[in-house]
Image (cartoon, rainbow, N blue to C red; front, side, top):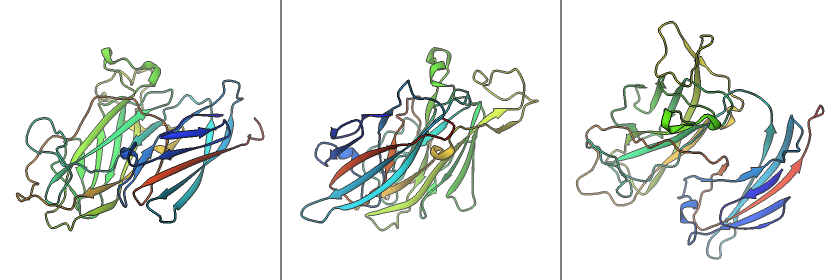
Length: 309
């Protein structure tokens, strides 16, 4: 296994390297206080690797600003290479930092999210596996103090206004090698919903504890093509699809509320969910850090093999 690419200014060799990420050159990779940020890391596994393979790698991150002592954190991750012909979903849910209009029409971000305004919660779901899923079940939990603004028909909102379960039984995700946009076959899709921040929210503040979890659905019917189906047949039942790795089926997010509320109070009416065209997803590791400034990302590798490998 070799390190192939990181973010920022990187240097090192096949076994370990580090990257310098600063707020001048890479501001989008610096999280807000209390927020999170996804830092993609691309790891290449040699074609000569015998399967099954299990390895371990470590990631450490240090953050510093001015003359303060760096704040550091570290964690180890397991890498498994298996030959398994099942689906493999993943989800990425960035922090909500921008306000969006709730009037009919495109919901384009138009500035920092202030108290009393609506924000756009977008998330990206991708299938990295070798089998299609014929539908998606998405569970969303919002941070305390934030509620959903008129959800779409596919979603059921909890009594607290902060939880939603959305079932997209017409949405199929195929393996990446089967993707064909001309035939409406996609391996990844961006979905989203509109959320409301109360006008009495004390800003600036980062509201933590948000979560998006995805689960693939398949049909209990033999010899049917789930990838090309637009809806489940009357005699089929949607059941959870087998997933090679469920560790990346959930992602956390925060809602970042800016310090200066607008005079009109924002918020208001209903609107369509924030959506976008299907897009690819970079497989990587996201680290959550709790300050702003510069990040030094260091990686080290320790290779192990399963006893039967």
